[in-house]
Amino acid sequence: MSRRGAAEEKTAKSDPIYRNRLVNMLVNRILKHGIKSLAYQILYRAVKKIQQKTETNPLSVLRQAIRGVTPDIAVKARRVGGSTHQVPIEIGSTQGKALAIRWLLGASPGSKYGFQMKFRISRCCQRKWRCHTQKGRDS
Image 1 (cartoon, helix red, strand yellow):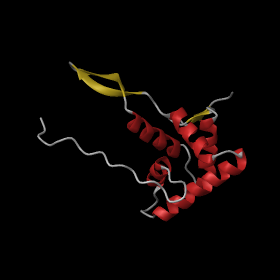
Image 2 (cartoon, rainbow, N blue to C red):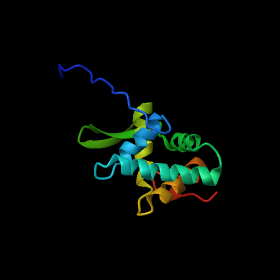
Image 3 (cartoon, helix red, strand yellow):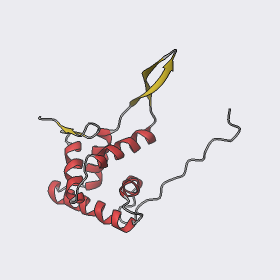
């Protein structure tokens, strides 16, 4: 057993324009080659396109998309005897949010990053896109 104490949880800083920690988490995940200003440009371009298309608050659309993708449980491999079983475990909100952001950004690659991200965020918000499987749903 480890003698080291529990790790302190760091609070994420908020971004300069929207003053939102969720936006900062997205920017940190987008980071390209360590250039944070480029990541901010990519995200702000996507947010601007969301605002133009939906004519609502883009942060609420972003929150709704991430809330729709966030998982409640995950499976973890457990070794029982000689075989490995997938056991469902409940995950916390922070880890679930991190998974949702990873899935959302993983489902929107490409050179037109801002456009793709806007498309995926708006589709996730409408629950027409499953980011974790990267497949659309006709509805």
